[in-house]
Amino acid sequence: MKQALLGTLFTLFGIAAIAQTINKEAYKRYVDIDKYDQSLDGYVVLKNGEKEEALIKYEEPYLLTDPTLPLITYRKKNNKEKAYLKDKIAGFYVNDQLYVPEYFDGDSSRWVMVVREGAIRESIVLIPNKPFDKPDYYTVNRLVTNTVTLRAYFVGRLAINFARNMSSLIFDDTALNKKVRDAEEGYKFLNYQQIVARYNMWFDSNNPDVIPYILPRPDYQKLIDSDN
Image (tube, rainbow, N blue to C red; front, side, top):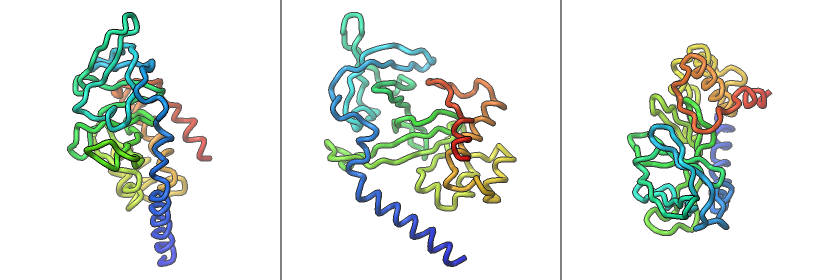
């Protein structure tokens, strides 16, 4: 038992150490630095769910996701500039990435890059190393959020006391919750994405049309099967 605990701790410390050595470049997997300041095809998602196609000014993450700065777009017909206040829209899509405002830990102003939609949303938070200035790099943080209860965990935090933390996200799916609580094979931290997919399938089945998907609904079953 003691050796297993030590092994887990060493693994966590090892992951943290690796992250510290690569985080200055890791963010480039999620942004296209060569396209900064270009106008790219995309669309703006309005509060009512409608989409307005537009050319969107692609900017550095600290600008693109700043809730106090407007989203700059250009009409495709006449190239006329139009700015959207971010608190007036539900999201936007540019450079093959969907961005939405995230609500967690009492903070309603953080914008994230969506990895996978659902009742539990997976997203990427890019945190600049200089919060109030042009950053040299961004640290990459993966986030899971129950979009109904607004409970959220960064994945690193989710791993600590995983059964309890994940249980708080999926509490209403009794059967799945029990498997996680009992730490059954296939329902541990390394399987968290499959657990999220199972929960999202269950939620959609029991609560149809509650989650307003912006992108095509993910193939949760494919993700579950990929763990087999």
